[in-house]
Length: 223
Image 1 (tube, helix red, strand yellow):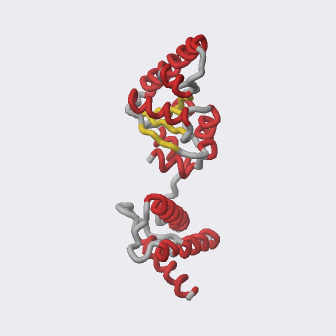
Image 2 (tube, rainbow, N blue to C red; image 1 turned 30 degrees about the vertical axis):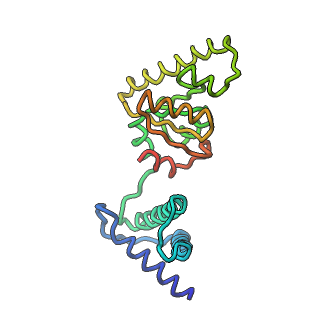
Image 3 (tube, rainbow, N blue to C red; image 1 turned 45 degrees about the horizontal axis):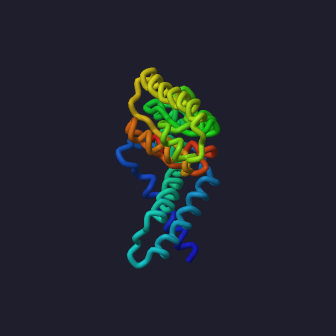
């Protein structure tokens, strides 16, 4: 049984390597098999078999299981690409260059400096990130903290004005119209996202554990 499942995985791997959309595959050159990566591919494909059993008889997946299933498929595809690149069949993608290129199409709005640092480490231009430590409208501040005293609202108004001016200035500076709001699912993040969607027609991305975001996750968001 185990040999049969292993053979199934090998066949799937061979089919996956034959074609990838409209990408032009080059003639393979000599190279060395990365046996660790290859083994991980086989193991991951075999693990995916559980979805066939748990989804019987219809093989229909709900949204949560579909996300898990597709994330695992994408992880396998990425590893296959690594092996194909080692043999010259496809070109290796420089993740950092890809992030630099894709992020250049956006202005990114987030809520914390720690999130900005995480994005900067992944090659996003820090000048293209605006950290909004306050909401974009004063009434939103009251929603976040109904007990806030009126005298504190004056200084917050100035901060809001500064953030909005910064957004407009950077949109002009980099000639971008598209705004991405990248936040966690906390109250301040959701209020910021909702308001930015109204003001800037922003694309909203909720991501848990944003300070630990990976390059692969960021590429998915920007693509």
